[in-house]
Image 1 (cartoon, rainbow, N blue to C red):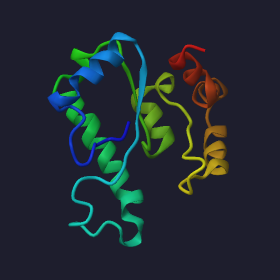
Image 2 (tube, rainbow, N blue to C red; image 1 turned 135 degrees about the vertical axis):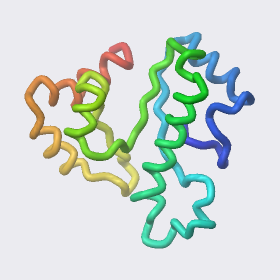
Image 3 (cartoon, rainbow, N blue to C red; image 1 turned 135 degrees about the horizontal axis):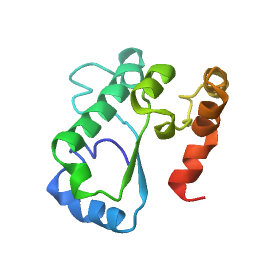
Length: 142
């Protein structure tokens, strides 16, 4: 799921039946950023600012709206996976290693798989195993 649908918030009432069906089935949802609303007005296509700045903003805006609008209270059975979170060790210190998964944008050009594996290799062994696969297997029920 993109973090906005043509500039519309994921928490809009029009999307409630979709979210309810996902929650009823206890399915995970990956929220991936796209160009945030106003990208043209802010000239974010120059220097690929949508990727380096806009994506973080788009994900942050979507998840923050979910928090403040009571989304997680309405859909308690859903696991939401937010991507492109930034500094790995800091993020783990905030949310815990049980809530972090390694991912890539492969086959798209926005990826650094070697760098991601190098960064996760710096984690303690138990955290590395969770981030590199154990958490994904748990969330997907494998």
